[in-house]
Structures are given as structure tokens and as C-alpha cells.
Image 1 (cartoon, rainbow, N blue to C red):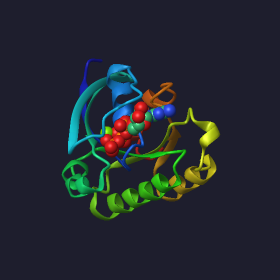
Image 2: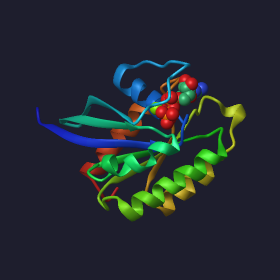
Image 3: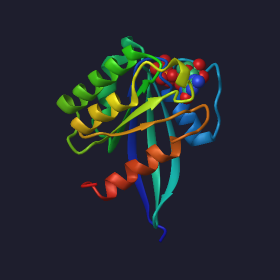
Image 4: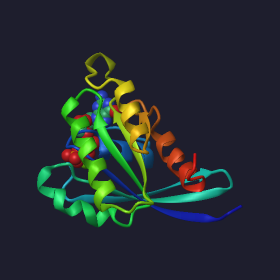
Length: 172
Ligand code: GTP
Ligand code: MG
């Protein structure tokens, strides 16, 4: 078919976890070592074929710096999906990710599909957050979980693909 579905999506997470890098990888297939910290938020869009459909993701890449925290509700309130990103080499960023999940659960739309992305999975030797711990947390809180790398591209398209699958089949 040639149906196009729009999906508003927001990325949330601590500063430097790789939100912009994940978006750059998904939208342009690129990675830069010195990605600049986001100011406010940045908008991108990208289409993805899922089964018979084309999904047009309308992506809000938010800034992780604390001074921008108060802007976040503008981006997550109407979102069909949220990707909460932490850095597997930074335990504090996982703590911050759990805070974002709590905020989404308390203030967000209950229909928003939530994904937890443990980014920088290429830096295994510096790991601080065990995958099992993140997976268990995600299961308890109704998120789906993947470890990603914006650098190597591992699991990046897959996160967006899985979001759309969950949107089509909310029970899975
Ligand atoms: P804010 O906009 O400040 O909230 O940060 P951000 O979450 O958008 O992080 P950003 O994408 O700017 O990435 C921060 C740094 O981490 C950059 O130097 C990236 O090159 C690096 N980085 C991002 N993703 C990865 C990854 O998967 N692997 C590795 N090794 N480095 C990464
Ligand atoms: Mg950024």
C-alpha cells in the first residue's frame, strides 16, 4: 500500500547520552565524534517502511542540559512515542533515564509508547550499566529495551521499527 502514517516522537535523556547522534544516524546515516550539545530542541523527520505502510516520524530531539528541562512537556505531551536514552558507560545517566520515565508516567500521555535505549553499546569495555538490569527495569515499567550505538549503527533503525510495531500491535 501507499498509506503514510505520521508519528510524533520525542527523545529524552541526560546530556551527552547520544540523542542527537541517534537521530543523525537514523535520519542521515551519519555519525560525528564531536556532536554539539543541543540548545532547546531540534526537529527532524524521516520515513520508514513498516510492513505495507510508510511511517513518517516527526522527531523532536530535546536538549539534555538541565536548564532546558522545563521545555520537555511541550514535546512529550502530544507524542506517539518517546525514546528515553542513557549511556551504558554512565550510571548517572541511567538514574536520569528512570527519572524521565517517572515523569512521562506521571505527566505524559498514557498512550505514548516508550522505548529505553542504552546507547554507546560500542564502548563495552567502559560499561557501567548491566544490560540485564536495564532490561528488568524496562519490563517492570512497560517499556521496550534495546542497546544501541549511533557510532556503529547497531539497533538504531530497529528502535524506530519496533516503535511502529508496538503502535500497530499495542499488546506485543
Ligand atoms: P545533549 O544534546 O547535550 O543533550 O546531548 P546528546 O544526548 O544529544 O548527545 P550527543 O548526540 O551530542 O552525543 C554526545 C557525545 O557522545 C558526542 O561526542 C558523540 O559523538 C558521542 N556519542 C553519541 N553516540 C555514541 C555512540 O553510540 N558511541 C560512541 N562511542 N559515542 C557516541
Ligand atoms: Mg543533542
